[in-house]
Image (cartoon, rainbow, N blue to C red; front, side, top):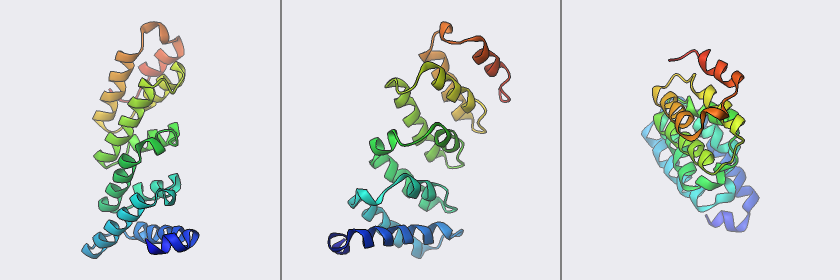
Length: 169
C-alpha cells in the first residue's frame, strides 16, 4: 500500500500482473490463498485498480477461490459495476458455472429492471435470452421477472414467438 501512495501507476501495473499470474493458474494451491487475500485487500483498498477487464479476467479464472474474489469485489463495489456490464456480459455471467456469480449478476439485472434502466423491449429480449440458460434458477428468475414486471400488452408478436421457440422448458 505504501507503494500505491508513492507511484500509483507502478502499483496498478503490479496488481494487474498479479491478477494475470493468478488467472493463469488452473489448479489451486493453499499458498495462492495468501496472494488472493492480499489481492482482495488491495482491490478493496484502492478502487482505481479495479476495472471491468480485470474483474472479467478474475470471474473467468479456473479456480473457484479467484472467482469468489471477483464476486466479493462486485458485491462491495456493486454500483461501480451496475452500469458497466453489458447485456452480453449479463447473459454470459448468468450462465456461469459458479452459482454465486449467477446470483450476483441476476441481482444486478433485477435492480436494473426495477430502476427502469432498459427499454421494455430490450429487457424482454434479454430475459428471453436468459430463458435458454443451462441453469434452472436463471431460467426461473427470468420467467418470474417476465411474468411479474410486464403486462401482456407489452409483448408484441415477435417477442411471443421468441418465447415459444425457446429451447428450454
